[in-house]
Structure formats: structure tokens, C-alpha cells
Image 1 (cartoon, rainbow, N blue to C red):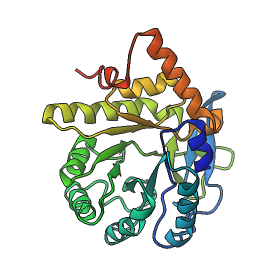
Image 2 (cartoon, rainbow, N blue to C red):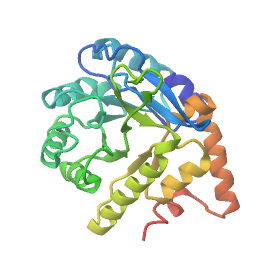
Image 3 (cartoon, rainbow, N blue to C red):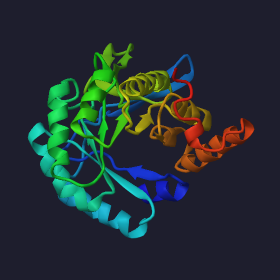
Image 4 (cartoon, one colour):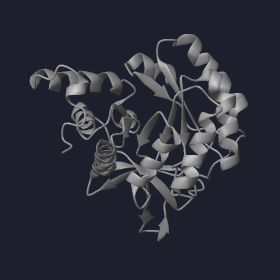
Length: 280
């Protein structure tokens, strides 16, 4: 999958988050499509960060790097506070950049919601690794600007925002939540306005504080116009996930073409002319 995404035109690929040890995850059903009034509005998942653990996962990383040396590989990791630094060190030789997932709705949120803990964790990881460190932050917090500032103060090299939004779907025929875990993470088209707003907030804060850290805008991007909107809110790059479900694995190339069409039509020469243009 990583190889196919790279061949589709993505500038970088990000792995599914993995941990030091194998994690089984939740029972089925774990993923459902949300349809309201015959409109497709997104996906709801509670996979529970299922993964085979580092020792097995690193074989996939080695295999990808042997075939795709020109495409940057972002390795996403998660764990407890005590495990993050260890796993980052274990992963360093297999990645072009490391993303720490402190924002998944299915793990302990003490890191994602506590600026002091997050800042100290990032500082600790940066003392160990030389790779660029990306911090994926959560929309499920009181003030995302405060969390972003803590991550930057800790020394992160980039921020990724946002992760999925905590949500639920109830089957009214059975009067029960649809997902086995009851609560899930909402992604797809429905969360794009939330993601755009969060990127806008973070970028506005950074301008005010004279901070210059790249933002990766994530959440509901399914076409070129969506990506342009995210860039205009302040993102330097755009992450794509659920759009693969809607438009196929070649969605990356499609979105690049759509972005180029928009830029040509509006006489934009490069992304820098677009980035943050909507932020006052």
C-alpha cells in the first residue's frame, strides 16, 4: 500500500501507527461508513491501534525503503510516556521522519491534553533522535493553540493536525452503538471544516508569536480545492487518508492535478503564494 501510494504521486507516505509490542485492537465491527439523508458524510472507526509490533513492522519499512528511495517515509509511533522515546530510537534508522501519535481517541489522552507533559516528552525524544519529529495533535482538546505551542516549545520540527474527532453512531433498530468499542474516531468529508479551523487557529497563533514550524493539514481532504483551502488556512503540506476510500488509491495524483488546475486558473506560481493567505 505504501508503495502504491508513492507511485500515485504522494510527496511522502505515513505508516499506520505502531507500538513496541503487538496490539490486538478491538473486536469487529471496527469501521463503518456514515450516511445521513442518503449523503456520504465520512467514516467512523475504532480499530484500537491494532498492529503487529515493531519487530514485524520494521520488515515492511525495510521493504518499502528498498523500492522507494525517493519518497519520504514518515513512521508513526505510539505508546506510553515511558515507551515513546525508546520506540523513537528503535525506529530512527528506518524513517525519514518520525511522527508521534499522541492524539488517537483510543489511547491515554494525558499526553495530548497536558501541555507540560507533551513539551517534556518531545524534548526528551529530540535528545535521542536526529530525524525530524512530527507531532500529531488532537482536536478533542479545550485549546489546540496551547497544545501546539507546547509542542513547538518542546522542539518539534512539524505539527500534524488534526486526528479524528471522537464520535458515535447508534443503530436505532437495535438501540445500541454500532461499533464494538461504542465510541470511535470520525474522519472524512464531515470533519474538513473542523480541520481547517484548527489549522487556521494554530497558524494565527504562530504568526502572532513569530514561530515558523510547518503544519500538515489533515482531515476531510478529498479534492484539489480541499487541499488549497487547507493551505490557505496556513498548512505547508496536506495529509490524505479517507479520500482513498472514496476515490481510489490514485487519489493523490488526481488531487495534484486538480490543485495545478486551480493554481493556473488563478495565476498562482507556487504553494508559498497560497500558504496562509486567508489568515489575517
